[in-house]
Length: 293
Image 1 (cartoon, rainbow, N blue to C red):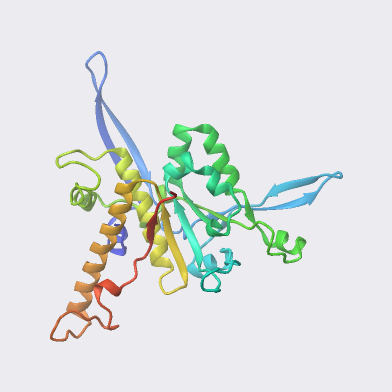
Image 2 (cartoon, one colour):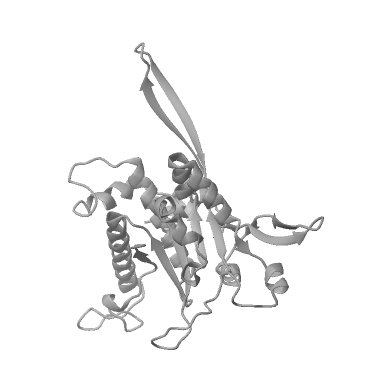
C-alpha cells in the first residue's frame, strides 16, 4: 500500500531502462522517464453550466478546479438527499472510486443519475485502460467527467433537490506521489494473496500493477477523509482485487497498531486494547471494496 513513508522514499524523477532484441538480433536500450508530483491534492473537477447563446441552450465546460485538501473535497461532494425507508434517516455521503472493469461493462450504472453514486472518482489508470480497450466507452467516460454540476446550475434551478446532481473527479494517480507502487513491497503483497488472485510462482502482470495503483487511490482518499462521515467505496467486479483490498488494509492496520503499541500506547495485561479502547475488529476500514452486482 502507498503510505507516507513510501512517498518519502520515492523520487519525483526516475529513469527506467529496458532492453529489447530486434528481428535482426540487435540489442536496443529503451529509456523512459517517470515524473511524479506532490502537489496534485485530491484530484480535479470539470464543472459545467448551461448558458443561452443565440436562442439556444449551450452546455459550457468550465476550467479544471483543483481539490487541494480534504476540506475542499467536502465542499464539492454532493450530500445525500434520500431517506432510508427502514431507519428514516438521511443516508451517508459516499465517494466511489471506480475500477476499469466498471467503466467497460457497467457504464450505464454510472451514467444513471442515482444518488447512491453521485460522487465519482475516476483514476487516470482506469481511464487509460478504458481508452486502450474501448474508445467508445472512453468518450462516454470523458462526458461523465464533464457532468459535474456547478453552483450556477443550483442557482438557476432554485435549489431544487430533484435535479440530477453529480460530482465527477479526475484523479491523476499515474503522476501522483502518494499513489505509486513501492517496488520493494508490491510483489510481496501480491504473493501473500496467491490463493485469491494468482497461483504460486506466477509472475505479476501489468494488470496487477494497475489494480494495485487503483487500490492506492482508494486508500489515499480513505486516509484523507479519516474522521469524517464520508463512506469511501472501491467499486470493482474483480473478486481478487476486492480480496487484496481487504488484506492490504488489515496488514496496514496491524502495522499501525504495532507502531502505536511500541511508541505511544500503554498496553494492559491482555495486550489487545489500543489508546482509544478499540480492538482490531472494531477499527473501521479506510475504504470498502464492493461489487456492482
